[in-house]
Image (cartoon, rainbow, N blue to C red; front, side, top):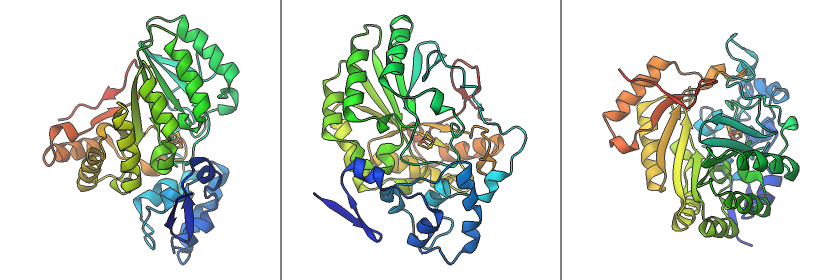
Length: 338
Ligand code: SF4
């Protein structure tokens, strides 16, 4: 079996084995990054009790050793700031805890979100679903059958969005079954998959998955969640290229994060790197006000200033739409630029 040698340990090119080997200990992570001489970074380790630390080694390999401000590290490292909560940062900022069937959200007229699986390969500290009651919305065949029944009864739906957690945590055979079932529903035309798993473990894009997408009558759109150009390496580009050759449309959505990508130059590098990887920048989200993530907040005026800055330095089609999700609204809400 081929291996990629990185940091202190070889990374095996099998996504399930990589998944079984994710890092969960902040101390080990900092040691690996030669940051164990920064005791202040460990002060937030108790935030694991709020939301566990979880990061695949293939993602850690893209972090800069010795850099306490590495933008990838900031997205995953526990922080004592997670214990400081302004009143408007709440556990369910998008009022998602009322589902149509367990794991199925029908928020928008023509599209419904199926929370295929409740777990992720990586735990992003800013995640708006970090408090979501996945235990009541388990990704299993019984709940998927209920969701499929609902979808059959709603002809206004033409697109299903696989979400999570991370939907690609489902095994290929589970995804294959779900895709087969959706294909039998005549009014479903498109399948959109929102995922971070192929970013953090590019080996998740298996040959079997590519073949399934290629053979499907559904138009497949895969939306990666990438926040910084350093997340994009050659291995990820190869995985995206495989999807492209199978006719999959590739889009990206990012979250605007303080200390990660709140800078015109960084956002321009991200857009260019995405396009080089065959991915079109689609959305830049302002942060959802979820409890534990206030330290990542960038305010609206600053967000607008960043987009205006981007418009002045990269091609228009590389500038993502600046949006916010408002609970109960029928679509994302664009932030007007002045
Ligand atoms: S991968 Fe997505 S759903 Fe999972 S923790 Fe990160 S932001 Fe949340």
